[in-house]
View 1 (cartoon, rainbow, N blue to C red):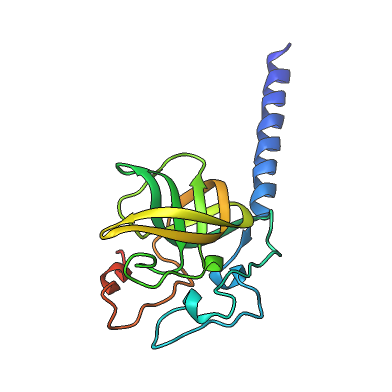
View 2: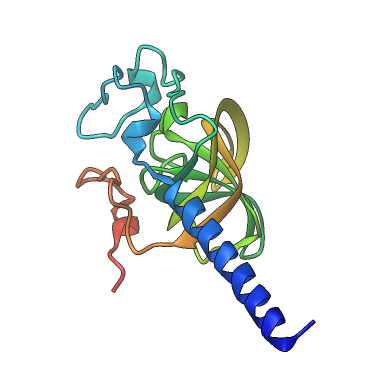
Amino acid sequence: MSRRFRSSATLAIVLMLATARADAAADVAHISWKDLRPATQAVAEDANLPMIAAKLPDHGETLSLNLQDKTVQLSGYALPVDREGDLVYQFLLVPWTGACSHMPTPPPNQIVLVTPAHPYRMAEAYQPVSVTGVLKPGMEKSQLFILDGVLIVQSGYTVRKAEVADVDSVPDAVTLPVNSPWNFLNKKKN
């Protein structure tokens, strides 16, 4: 095989891979938290608190199925479920800081159970991240170990083999009320 032919074949393979990656990136739906609940479900608010499952008629168990099996990208806050040191093997993606530990738990249709493709190195709980992967609706229960015991949290969606990336902020994050003890988690990174 001539050197020129090998170079041309290598270039063709590189171009095919680049095209495949571009096509895959084009197929990613960038979604927000409101896309995970049915359009008919209003946001329940009480005393400036974000949507709380107990305030919803269906307790937030009605899932949006229009994104089922689609590759999505969603930003939120990572709350470790399975970790060893700073390596996280599974986490809950939630729409606000402090959710599930001393703040109301979001409804299941506002919680995503994420299993990264590779262990994710997390510096702190509620670290803002972007998750990309195939969204699967379906109720899952996770056991969290929090400061004062164990909490069982139900999530409405899963993303397995997810690509996880740090982000500076979450575009559609729920803002906590001024008197929340968790406001220090809403700090801005410079």
